[in-house]
Image 1 (cartoon, rainbow, N blue to C red):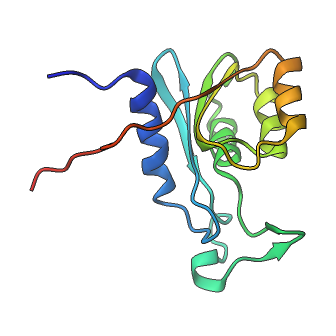
Image 2: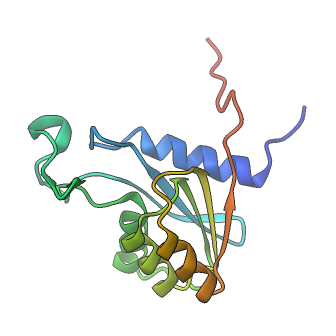
Length: 150
C-alpha cells in the first residue's frame, strides 16, 4: 500500500476543515504545520456564538462577507489563544490567501504557504510574500481525497 504524501495529507486536512465552514460564498480550510505535526486548523466562519451565514445570510460590504473570519486567521488566532508559536511553521490552505491573511501569515512568521486553488491571487500579496521570503507553492489535492469503506 502506498502512503499519502505529507503535502497531500495536510491539504486533505484543510479540505476536511473547509467542510465546517459556515459561509455560503466560499468554503475554506487552513492547517498550520510545524515539523510535520498539525499545530492548528481553521475554517471560515463567524465569531464564536455569533450569527452564521448559513443561518442569517452573508453580510456583504464592498463585495466581501464581513460576517466571517477567514480560515487562515482562525488558525492563527487559535495558536495565539493557546500560546502555540507559529514562527517557521507552514500553512496549507484550500485557496490562495487574501491580502489581509497574507499580511497576518507574514507577521506570524510562517515561512511556507501551500494552497490548492487560485482565488483572486492579489499581485500585492504575491509581492509581500516575496519581500518576506515566504515560499508559496500550489499543491492541488489529488482525487480521490478520502475513501470511506461501507
